[in-house]
Image (cartoon, rainbow, N blue to C red):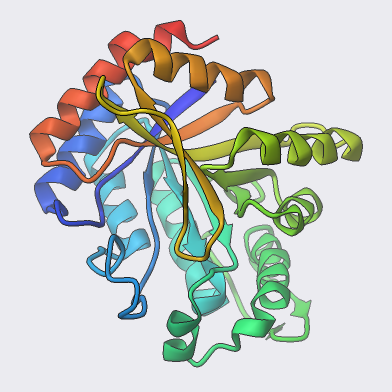
Length: 296
């Protein structure tokens, strides 16, 4: 299992120092990747933790300039809120300038107020996202792209330079539902869940195994409370979905992560909580030293 770190581009402890130091420390400690979180303007009914947030792609480009080799990822970009061709250019630019280090995690979104603010039909977000994924592939594969779809028409244009990675960065579709997994299997390179409970993960993994897809990555974003006073527990997301939070001593956290690994999870983006920067860096070091070696 490979481990990444969610950088603090949101929350009460958001700071330039926290973003930069956590990314650079993750690279120094040997983490596989660093991840930014995406919302732009959430509804007032959901002020925490995403009411105070740095824009995901801008932040990731800044991190790219401060690091040398660590993989860069989005967990996740709410694509239906964004103009597809501009976003494709931004992502291609990050990949090009970083030397091919980008993974693009995308999702359909869940917060209706955010969609109303942007004038995007919340009910059509799934159909829009699927067409966006097809268009990203076209734009990243040809300097003279041609595309005809329900929401997009591209012809007689030049899209250059292409991303550093041939065919473009890997795309991982986010979401815990069966629909999200099917979307990932048909249109992407991997699936990126958020805090999925073990029983739901078993169901999704059965679907993935039955598909026969090869080279398909199963990745997750997990909140980890690395604290002897904490315990693993289930909560609810802002959309009402079940979320599993891993907590406890390092040995207990390693046991829980090993369960995910045994079910087929290959990569985890770890969110260590809304912490002051020095406390976050300390937890990052503790995780590498006391948790990672014990994960089966």
